[in-house]
Amino acid sequence: MNLAQGAIETARAAGAERFAADELTAAVDALKRSNDAAAGDDYRQALSHALDSFERAQNAAKLAVESRANARGEAERAVAQVATLLTTAEGRLKSSPLPARNLKAPQQALRAAEGSLQKSRAALATEDYLAVEPALKGVAADIEAAMAQIDARPAAAPNRRKR
Image 1 (cartoon, helix red, strand yellow):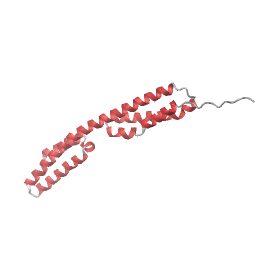
Image 2 (image 1 turned 120 degrees about the vertical axis):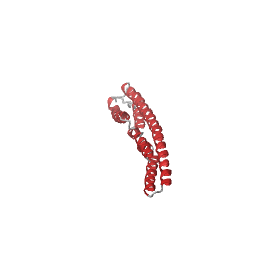
Image 3 (image 1 turned 90 degrees about the vertical axis):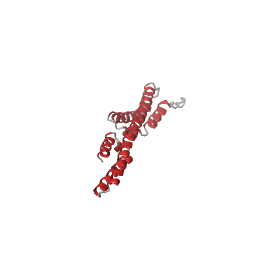
Image 4 (image 1 turned 45 degrees about the vertical axis):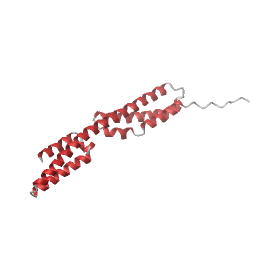
């Protein structure tokens, strides 16, 4: 039972509460059943539940490490994709032949995207990988819409003849 408790603590340290919650919960429940069986003098059942708890806790730790690494990779890719898209949009904005009044909406969209990107980078810095996706939700689409506005051709002025 002590080994199972140690494995549970190791799994928690590996981030199982966020990345392998179901398996960690199963390990904790099995340990509780082990304690209950031991209190009822059913040591064979207590040992069985303790072994189950230990195995589940080890699995939770492994899953947490894998899931965390996957989440980190996905978060880093998402941030890089949005950062590249934002850099492209900012370059197009600077070289746009459109009058400044036509660029206000795209500029605001790009400022909002920059704010979301900063939030996602802060989440990465604190290893809160699961917060990156919500911070960037819809940002790429907003940047692409802004680029469409930037790339739009100005409407031709109507011909005005003097009479």
